[in-house]
Image 1 (cartoon, rainbow, N blue to C red):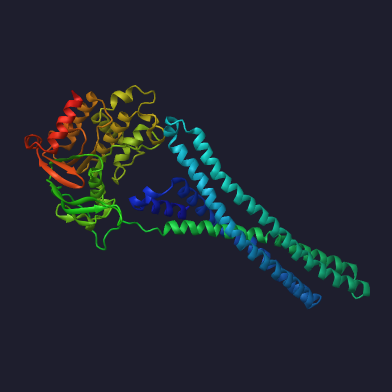
Image 2 (image 1 turned 120 degrees about the horizontal axis):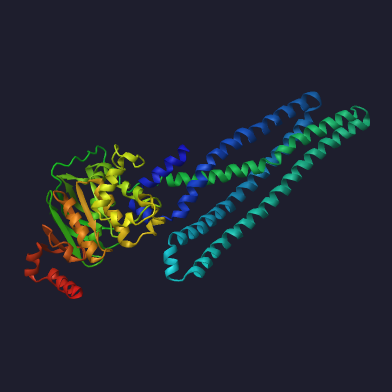
Amino acid sequence: MDIATTVFEHILGLSFRFHLNRETGTVLRVLQRGSGSFSTILRTVLFSFFPVFLQLFIVTLYLGVEYAYYYSFIILGSVVIYCAFTFFTTEWRTKIQKKMNESDNKYNSKATDALINYETVKYFNAEIHETRRYSRSFEGYKRESIKMTASLVFLNIGQQVCITAGLTASLVIIAQKVANGDKDVGDFIMINTFIAQLYMPLNWLGSYYRMIKQALVDVESLYKMLHEQPEIEDSENPVRLEFTRGEIEFKDVSFSYGPDLPMILKTISFSVPAGKTVAIVGSSGAGKSTIVKLIYRFYEITEGSILIDGIDIRQITQNSLRNHIAIVPQDCSLFQDTISYNIGYGGVGDPDFDIEDKRNLDKVYWAADKAQLNEFIDKQKDKYDTLVGERGLRLSGGEKQRVAIARAILKRPSVLCFDEATSALDSRTEREIQKSLDEISRNRTTLIIAHRLSTIMHADLILVLMNGSIVERGKHQELLLLGGEYAKLWKVQSREDH
């Protein structure tokens, strides 16, 4: 349990890039098999391997002392050959096992992916395609499974040959002595019983060894994941962020998602004064959302520095940095739980806030009211206990976004980030929520990523981003009078609105 919890915590602590590239189904299978393998190894070694070899030692010692040393040699020789054959064959089977595990991970990952994206599958009428994709993946698993079964048959035949040869040799010797009158039939029966009883657990030795090897393979995968290093780590002597002014400053920041990829941001500089609102606009792919990710320190900047209250965020603990920031993303992801839980999730970073404590419901109700959610919740049969479904699929886009807004409000952050926060709302609800957003962002440092320019007219500073560079900056009226890119965007959107 401790190992599973440790690995799960480690996975959650890995960097943003790892989680973008991972396959959820594969990660879960590695976690499940790996954590269960530790108990398999302990149980097999302690209660299976150890008793077998203890019994082998006692029987061979007794037969060697009471009868003759060659009985011990025959038994030990056959057991050594048996073990060597078993271990070498099992090593060969382990390679097959690894391939089978990979196939197992692959087809489970395909199934998980299809079920998580069930809505998309329905949109594109892709049930047959996904079933075929799953079936092809399962076909690979089936082939490796058949190889695994065939290798088990080969292993069992070889083991029986070793056991039968040792038993036959011992019985031939004792039978001759009985025929010569040196021993009686009771000795023959006793040696037959002893050796048969000794070899019986050896039949399972290959299975035990295979179980341990398989468990070690699973543990290896688990450790490989455990040794995955976070891309973003705290510095050697990090400081805890205590907001004094709440000013954010970008100094000549450049950023690329990889060494071989183009620069997303190119030497940009701007500041968000304490308690003020700065909006960033621009076309898709200009790098607007990347700026928010960099403030959260999901990625390490390529060049330049980002300062909060004059402190480089690379010198601040990630935990304290993110505790002071809340975001309302464009694509809001919800947990498969109640509305109350999903709103209350905004407070889990506060050690004094227990999401399961009913006494905190007043805070949840307050946040829901500010996000204009009460009207929707009152229509639900279970009110705040209404389940939202996986990733919030039971809610509309606007309802999901309002839950995200309530969650951010509940966090009471020092810095608020809105990444297209009202993009999924109708005009009436947008105006109502905009009032709430204006209210909660008052006297808070606020960064708004916006596509709809009408939502950022009130901003203290508007930055126009194009191809990773800031091409214009100023207030709404100033930028309109400038007649540049912002004015063009405003004209296009005004025509569309009209």
